[in-house]
Length: 329
Image 1 (spheres, rainbow, N blue to C red):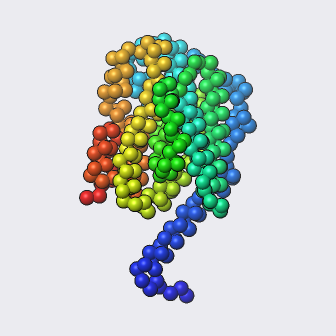
Image 2: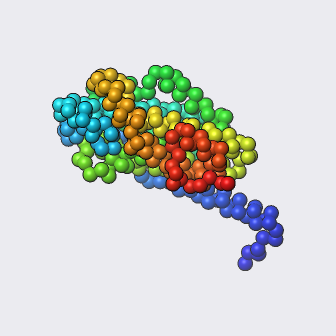
Image 3: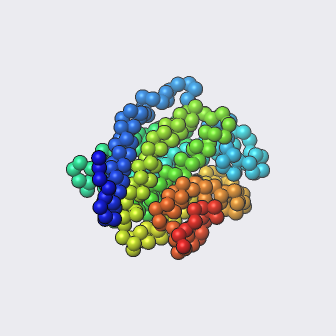
């Protein structure tokens, strides 16, 4: 029979060991899941099946209710063919931006893994995730190619600035995994909503979304467990700096992932007044941005990154929810 700890220090050591063991078990379970259930884009997606062919005028590409432009009178006054092309452009741009983000993510993960010691459970999982993200990139690019649309993805200046992201792990791995959640959570949020909206989706789009959601669930879980494990043990000043940076990163990333693509606006001559009404001054669109980071906001509160100072930054970035977990007083 195990004796009780003889002191507060002993109890704390026991708790630390238990927490480390629990954390390691989670990482090992995620690695096993990546072996047991994964997809190969050129094996598991029937790209050449007639039902999977991409027709720019297919009505299934019309914008869903999740995108506020879909219900605007300007959009509804377009011909069915134009409405379908606008919707397809939106889907293809989301995939192009997604693969560009995952390109940055893979490079950052490898920079993180480069310094991991022998025997680290994170090393194996990070390589599983990198492999899966590479498959996602191929899957997304193949879809974009088959639309035959001139999709660019991130705006040029933003793409240049984004090249710093892979080097974040050399400064702070915790900050890097906040960046990871900033890109993955909004897309996961939107894709889950799309699959539940009751509409008939194009089978190629639906297959890609289901694969992406299933594998991203593991990636998001790893980032969340990593932050839960590391952030509470950070020095107070570093935790404060992370708490200040997190809402800035999350607010910017959510807007990058959910914003309407400029080339689409120009190609279809969507009036500036419509864009402003639908995306910039629409309370529902602002709520969508807040909702898209809701799980990460709850995590930040849980691990002590939200206090009266940092909560104000969340509010300024437009991603604070009044019903969010209260900041410590």
